[in-house]
Length: 303
Image (cartoon, rainbow, N blue to C red; front, side, top):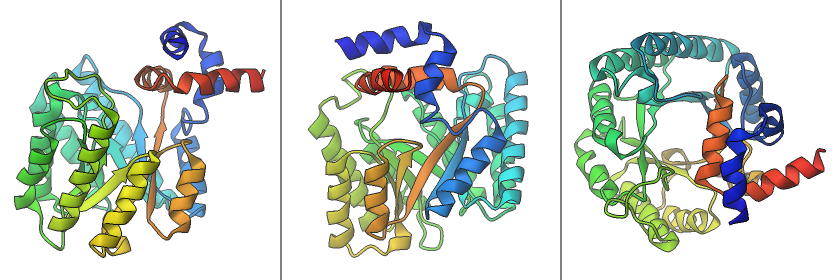
């Protein structure tokens, strides 16, 4: 209850106070800061995926501006030699305003990444967006088979079937590339698993199916039981190190991250940056109130 109370109050606290906590989980407000921090991760043998913070815009003018920003992100990151790819949220490009306009913008971003032999991952948002975002992925993968990925959320009851339905896109030279995460949005029990073990079981079941079918999973977790379960599946199916990767959020569980790398597994870290860090930080805290304890410790520790 205390953690939930703090999480609820945080959006009303001064931004400078919130930044004390947030800066450990945000790669900066500017692209230049994000590139510096991405390169630091690269120096530790970690790949990255850069994401501009923001979603749910209200005008198509914003969508156009966001597209231009992403094109600049790709240009500057490639120029700097960052070892990483890019992630984006379709609502940031107007998916809920005009899905055709959004597709055009996202296609241009994917084409830009493809020109550098790189890729863009389509983030999965809440359930009203799921079908539209799978459709986006299908359409883009048909044109850019090696340059686009998708996110799926293990807590949704539909996810295993969604993965199976993508099997027709899976070819050995360009496998279906999916980041599998637990899921962060508050969804009704009718469509989402709620119990911890139940979600973990489905997460590992999704990963196992992908290994069986030769798909490429990004195992996005900070949960030790899932990491250990993934180790067992990798051993069971004798999966080569270049056929999967682990993924984590910037600044989260660095010790676990290092232990995974030390075991010889590929690691990618999500590198969020941008002026909209405040909304991202407060939303993350609402999604995971247990982090409130970390905030309080940080505030006392740093004065």
